[in-house]
Length: 83
Image (cartoon, rainbow, N blue to C red; front, side, top):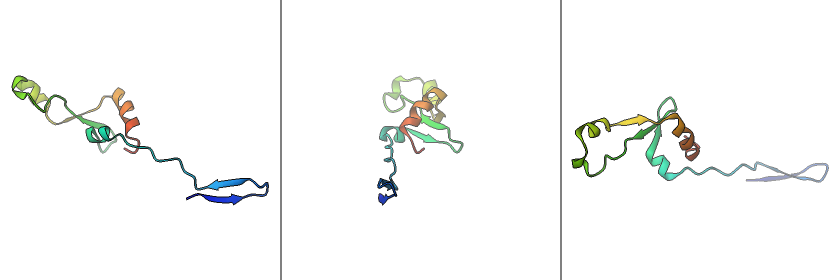
């Protein structure tokens, strides 16, 4: 809520005006999460379907999560302003 006040020079001052909230990209919040130290985690790609034609080594190495590279962190943090 904004509060209007008038000072001695008859200028109207607005108090309590805040910048609008930033929106989080829905696609980014589903794909990335933060660790306790603030780093970003991501899942591995190409694990969802057609696994019969992928090598056992690829499927084994794609388990779990990994940390996002520093170059990509700068991009993703723009999409997640409150992370």
